[in-house]
Length: 411
Image (cartoon, rainbow, N blue to C red; front, side, top):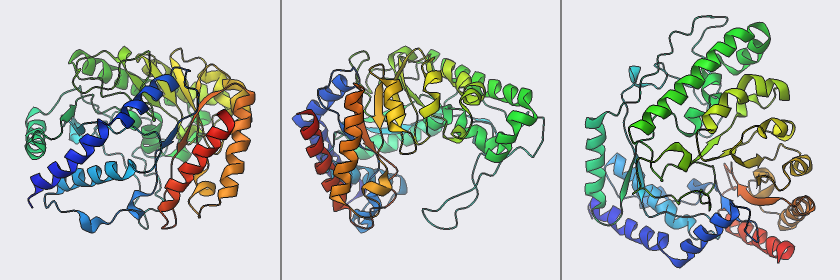
């Protein structure tokens, strides 16, 4: 069987799932959920140690690019069996290639040190030397698509999929998701430890760098919008981006303004900063980026407990993350009915070290009670599951338990 037939067979199965009544119902529920109207909280499995459930020997495509898409299709089929409220969409996405200085979004390579083992940790490898004042080495390029390379990839992929599944060509630019939150890149530019000293040793210099990064991202987004680079498939909210206030994700609607889209930002690297410094040295620079979009979601793994008063300054904020490191009660009290609370249970307690069903039930009941007391609208995101101790079946069972507890608590 050739690569094209492999992809088309899998794509046909995914299209059937994506267009099923079950997925249509999930889309309807997320529209309600993100608009404060869903009668029960929804479940989103963001991470579930897929590689511990997947046998790579089933992959048949010989072409490396097509092989990656083959695995993605297998994952879509697998996750449709897990029982959560994730929405599988009827298209695959290809990102455009962009013309950039040295093929890097800041003109220089931002990276981390080598990992000592697969799945291990890496250290920051800053590109600015300690106490270096000049950051002119940062040379971001204007928004410009490399049409030749992009066309080659697009033609290859559309030829492979044929009529079985649409290929969406994303042209939003190089500053989406993590690349556009400032926080992720500035820690790579300066180094996290140096950044924490800079707020004391050279705050004006740091403000200049932050302003430069903010203005670069804003200008790139503006240019992308002017060029018709955004589509309704470019929603980002680190969840399922349906809401009554915004149009549904749709790759066929292009040239849309940012005001019609979700945007997600976070500042994990600033989690240990005081609330006032969090505002001064990151959030005030992120705020104008977010406010160019229709609605935004904030927070990933960081503890946002003490900065929620500052997050309230974001006029289009809709979702706030409550991570395992946060004080759930204090967050719930501050969030109230004003925002959707994105509850992120501790993956280590949930499934990483085995599945203790009684513990999961107690954990959920405790938090559900807190959220009910405070009238919160919330959903449940299981993320950062790096391992399930080679028991992938526990993910599905965990979802069943949480679903049972939702019914018990909310009818």
